[in-house]
Every structure is written in C-alpha cells, then in structure tokens.
Image (cartoon, rainbow, N blue to C red; front, top):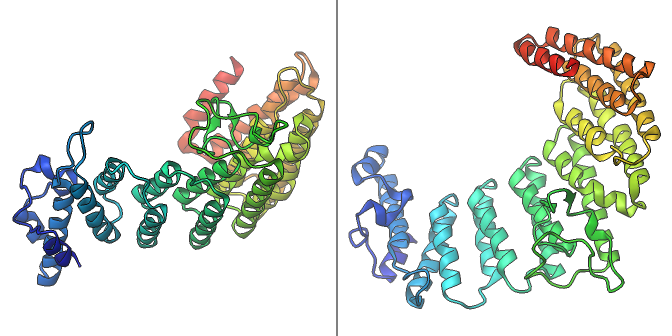
Length: 407
C-alpha cells in the first residue's frame, strides 16, 4: 500500500530531502541505523518504505503558516497520513501535519473521516496519546460536532474500549470531555470551572431559557445550544451508572473512581444540592463503595484515596456551614476503620492512614480546648507512630508530618 501511494504521488525514498531538519524528529536516524536494526530482508524493505512515506509527509511544503496554502500539497498530506498513521499511530508529527492540512484547506472537513481514521489507529494502540488527542480535536473543531447523536456514538466507543481495559486513562479523559459537551457547557468537561467548581456540577443549574447558568471562563464558543435540564440529568445519571458498574466489577479501578469524583457535584445537584446533599452522598459512597472495598482488600489504595477525597474535599462544609453532621460522619468513619484494624491485626498501613485522616479532620472542626479534640489529636499521633513501624522506609516522612502537626 505504501509503495502504491508513493508511486501514485510520484514520490520515492530518494526524492525525499535528506536533511534532518526537513524530516523532523521522527526520522532522525540515518539509513545505516535502519538497516542495522533489521536482519530480515522483508522487514527491512518495509522499514525503508515506511520511512520514505513518513519523510514524504514531513517534507511536503505546505507554505507559510500565515500565507496561502497549496491545496494540492495539503490533500497529498491528508492522503499520505491516512495511509501511514494506522501503521504507527504514535507519530505526533504526522498528526500535526494532518491537522495543519485540514486547517489550511479552510473547508469544513469530514468529521466521519477523522473518527474512522482515529478509530482504526486506536484499535491498533488503545493508549495512543496522539490518536486520542486528534479525535478530541476533531470533535471540538468540527462545526455541529456537539449534536447528541454524534456524542452518543462516541460514548458507545469509549464504553467498548473501557470494557477491554478499564484503566485506559486516555479513554476516561476523552469520555469526560464528551460528557462536558453533552452537559452544554465548555467543550472540555474534564477540567474545573474557574479553577474551583467542577464543571459537571454547576452546568445542571439552568436558567429559565434552558441554558446552563454556570460555564467555564472564556464562554462556550463553538458549542451548540445547551440541552434541557432533563437532558443534562440523563447524561449525569448515565455516567453515574456506568462508573457504578465499573467499580462493582473492579473496586481497585482508580480511573473509574476518579471519574466518579468528577460526577459527585452534579449528582449532588440532582439530589437537591447544598451541604446536606453532599454529606448524604458522601455517606452513601463510604458505605457502598469505600468500606466494602477496604474490607475486601485493605492493602488496595484506590478505595482509601477515594474515601480521603470524600471526607477531606467533597463532604467538607463551607467555612460558615454547620459542622455537627460532618463531625458525626467523621466519627462513624473513624469507628469503622478501627473495626477494620482490629480484624486485620494492626498490620494494614492504609487503614492507619485512613483512621488518621478522619481523626485530623474531626479535630479540625471541634472547638479549642475540647476534650474530644485533644483525644483525636493524640490518637492521630499514635497512628503516625504505627505507620512508621509498618512502613520503615518512610519513617522520616511520618516524623516530619508529626513535627508539623505538633507545631
């Protein structure tokens, strides 16, 4: 196929510029190195042909960035990258050349073609940074790409990949991106709004005309009209149920738990919003997700980190909020971990760490001079001592933490 392409476009290995600067970082080995790497004549011939095709793409002059493009050269690059990238999807230079060619033609490109190409590449390497990035760029850049039908098809694709590998964080990031688009706000739903509020939460709060009242800084240029509140609720519930299934299948799936943490604010909004909804949801997650996983495999850190996030970030009341119910939740969590420590025979470092987290947070919401606060601080100190005994390689770190806590 490569020989056919090169011949069709009147390109050969010999016609490609040999200067290293002209062929980019992906072809900076000389011919002798290529031949030395392969002893099989057929493999060597394929390697040479592949190198020639890559160099042909990089060596094609597309004109200055601000000048008039050469449509013929741009189309040649598109045809060449479509032939070469499925063989090796990780060549960022080729993807960059393809994007520039699409932009230089100054015409609405076929989203379907880009999705098909990246799908082929991702089936070859499901964790290709460059291929996922190009797919995301194509969806974001193509006019009308946020139509629900396209997004549903993309969500189905991510489901397929995540069923094959539930820890493919590239795919999880792309799914968050799609969910953010479906929720009607900024196209990238994987990042916080304004650096503080998770995008997937405030987007559910709608104004009377159905548009989301909270968006990422910089507006929503390029996005279609925000979906209705009912549509946004359906998206959040679908994603919540999906992460529930993933965590149920494998409670140590850190990627699924991370995505679930992004959905927590939106799910709390669906349940009425406010500190009460967040606290109730955190209590539910501790009971149904964190504790069963901790009792099943106390040494698996994924559930402990998720529990720490629930207690220290998500359920924590505002500065002026009531702390009585929050303190109750912390006491319950501390008691639950104590029971686990007793069952495990004091040998699980993560359990001691989880207990210390609950105790430190509890001490932080109790008044100065309170006897319970003093007891929590003392028990938290004993937790550090136990952790240093169980994990001697980090003894210095635990001592440093103790010094800071005492100071």
